[in-house]
Length: 331
Image (tube, rainbow, N blue to C red):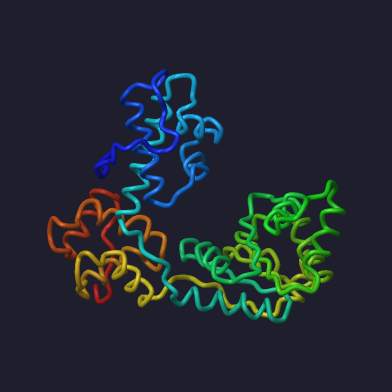
């Protein structure tokens, strides 16, 4: 991993002689300097490297009794990937058409303390918008639903986000959650809500009724099929929905162009042909654009040749194994 020159002055907690080789001590300095420069914690690195927090702390404090070489190499490998990712300049969040619509639903649901529903095709950025909304709007609880999430897991997650003690027993959990939320301005967002168990959805309905807080269900078009039918299993939820826009099928061309311009800013002004090519390959998916096309262009196209349709097509075919798309105007 390429790292800046390291000040050889001993850092706090530097290991002394013992199980640490000279190379180990240098690696500890590299890890500590990286964390300090990036503003990242040891807990963050522990999770990223899958090394228990206590073990990682001992190693970086010079107190590990065995050779730390393997774990240090593991840490440095993680930091190399993270460094590459940071240097890539991953595009910032774009407040485009999907963002505007989802925030409108969330804001109105909070205000009117009812249900809101947002459905959209995979890859349009629903989950990213949910996380961004939570970061920028206080008093927002976001549950990223796991498959068949049960009421108990749901209540535990919500109480944990509220930094509240979690009592034993489902009924006590529910009562405590109602007590904490009643009279507040919270909104609860359930992302990928179609994966939630029917019992958990019913608990969300009762939570809304008893605590008088807004609840937004976000998911794919499968969520519509689950709760839309009149007189169906979730008719009581459907009847409480205050805002339910039609299913979002794709991001807009303007959204895609903005994402590309920001992510590929180092390439200078992007020609309309380049933007049209990216739009054709992305086919309305923010995920395909931001997680596939743009990283591949950065890795294999930037700084070698001017960006062009031909270069993007070559990268898409040889790196991503994508078929050539049809462009607007093609017969």
